[in-house]
Length: 85
Image (cartoon, rainbow, N blue to C red; front, side, top):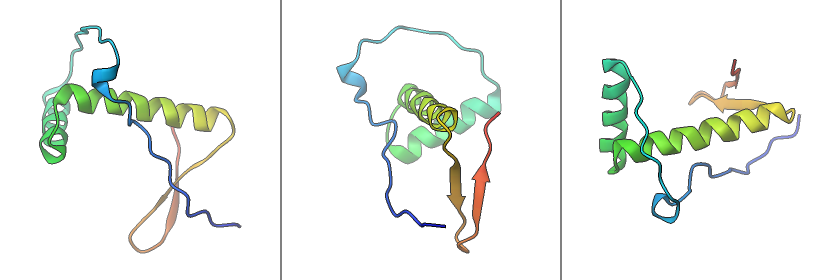
């Protein structure tokens, strides 16, 4: 099995370069807390975390749809396949 060291940046779409549409979603308190935690850790807004998550989901969906696999390497170097349903 050939190892690849390449990385791909996803979700790097500058939000100020795109028109936006205001949308309302219903989220659980746990989801809101997770969004706020990510926004604080990244020094960005909850809206930006949501936009980035959508782009990442789209990228992963397209990669799997075209026959790719999503692999995650644990700190102990164990490789796991992430299966999206």
